[in-house]
Every structure is written in structure tokens, then in C-alpha cells.
Length: 236
Image 1: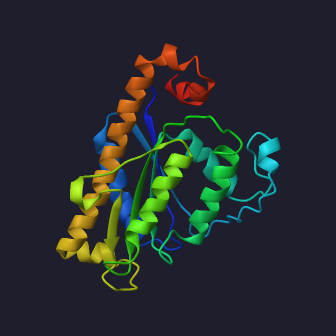
Image 2: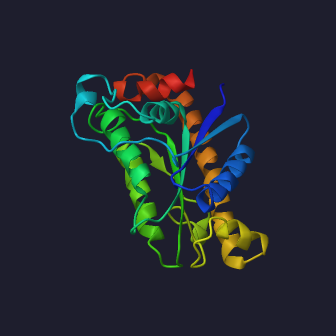
């Protein structure tokens, strides 16, 4: 059986706190299952235009008319069985570049072009705000809704530290490496955040393995429904 493909997406314009937490989650994902291949991309500096609702993708098999970095990222997303998003909270939500990617992804490969496809990918979310109560739950909830709209499965981590995803805070600092520095200094809040991020990575690959095993066991039954064909193709 081919390895699980895990894709980490850093939605921050900087390579700091969000990337640090994503790296910890990906390390845990590697250890969480046998035969895991990890890839990661950072949206910082990428060219990602907003969706202009032209509906070109509807009549062109999901292809987007606007040519930029979206096509490469979409291909990576579709080829992966696990997607881990890590991003800072912007205005009680996700950053603009990440929103542009998800908007276009949803149009070209989600609930409009392929309305019945059950992708069954596992999606995990990691975020950090400037303050302890900085909108982390709101931002994480958006990714949960995104997973459901894409007919995928959101994953939680370990109990109270990551109910719907891993949410930390940057200690009211603007420092690009605040999270890493506080973790190195053995700050208890930073420790919990890192543990939460790691639990998301670990549980995501565990759930993906369970889904894959179930798909193999139910292959003949699922093959009768075209909605599962892309998922079954990944099992080959």
C-alpha cells in the first residue's frame, strides 16, 4: 500500500510562530503511523488571487481560469490524505491568503463542480492569536466548516487542550519567534500549545489509517456509488 500523503499548509505571511507549530505537528504525524510522506508549503510570498466567481471551473472540470500559485497548491491538496493548516488569527478569522486559497479550492474541487464527491481526507487545524482570548476558537471553527464542505473529516486532538484544533497565543508579543522562544524557556502555556499541535498531527494520521482500512474493507460496496471513486482510486 502506498504511504499516507500528509500536507502541511502554513497560512501565515511570515515564517515564524505558525510554521514552528506546523513543524511540530508534522513531526508527530511522521511518528503517528508507518509509511508517512510529509510535504509542507508556506503561503507567504505566494501569488493567490481572490475568487472572482466567474464559474470557469464549473464548465472546465474544476480548472481555475486565473493562473497563479493556486494550481500547484490545489494539486498538492488533492493528492494528500491528510491536510494540516497552521495560521495566525487575523480579525477573528483566518488570514486573507489562506481564505483566497480555500475559496478557490471550494469552487474548483468542492461543493460546486463536484457536488457529490466524498473525498474523506482528514483535516486538522492549528492557530495562534496575539492574546489568550484572541479569536482562536472562531478561526478553528472556520476550518472545521471548510472540512465538512469539502466532504472531508475534521480531527480533534487530545481532550481539553485541543477540542476542535490546537489554539495557542503569542503572549501579547509581535515577535516572529515568540512561540518557539517561550517553549524553549519551558513556559507552561507554550508547552500546552505545542502538545496540542503534536496531538493534531498524530491523531490526523491515525484517523486517516482507520479510514483507509475501512475503505479497503468496504471497497466493493463503495464502488457502487460514484461519489467514492476518487477516494477508492487513492487506495490503489
